[in-house]
Image 1 (cartoon, rainbow, N blue to C red):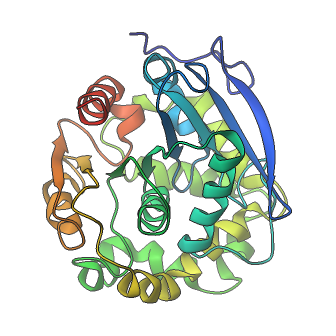
Image 2 (image 1 turned 30 degrees about the horizontal axis):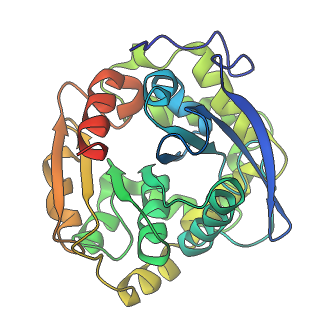
Amino acid sequence: MTFDSPLSPDHLPDGFRHDTAYVEDVKLHYVTGGQPLGTAPLMLLIHGFPQNWWEWNRVLRPLGEHFTLIVPDLRGVGFSDKTESGYTKKQLAADLFGLVQSIGDDPPHVVGHDIGAMVAYAYAWQFPTRSLTVLDASIPGVGDWDEIASSPLLFHFSFHQKRYLPEALICGGREHIYISSFINDRIDNAAAISAIDMAEYVRAYSHPGAFRAAMEMYRQFPQDVIDNRNAPRLPDSLPVLALGGDRRWGPHIVGRMSAVADNVRGGSLPRCGHFLAEEQPELLVAALREFCEH
């Protein structure tokens, strides 16, 4: 398995390509590659904030040896459309279901990190899913959400939900200051995210309307709580992997997901903060392979 990154986000590994699809008139940008369609299971990788598809760059090649990968930019991020509305996790999951259906008919392994984990959970209770993986996240309305959402350590939940203020303070030249600080506060190994990586994340949220769209994902948390609390419990037949960094949510994440599913395994990746795919790519790939292939 090869874990070195491509030179830049504009030069993909061999066998991967950028593409776009329209789902209900919303353009979604995504990267796809790995095994030829129909020869291996689909795997959907969903990024978090303040990242885009590129957060998975170190695991594309090794996961692509075993899966057909679909790696989108969520609605509002990067080269995907920046609509005025549509940022509940239920709707973002519906976007991705439409994207998957445009590519193949088989249910995917759904893997989400941070905000993407919230979307992944909403995908799993709405649509056919081969397995669900939640990476270092709390889920609106699930488990200890009320305690987590009010914690001073997660001040950004309230800040991002303040209408218009984050955009006014950050957009127009301060995106790098905010995004780099946000990432560095949550990472255990700062060297795992390079200057090229950071520049790509800043670029993804500097497109007109992108930062506002990201804030709308947080502003929809109250509706996400309602949607998730009205959702059915995940079926016993659905395997759930819950992983976090041992310096972040790893010690709590299996218990959190056990509030909505019985078939949960996982725990902590060692020497890891919030950004599992970049801080511990080898361990993450090994965990995903063992989980998805058995």
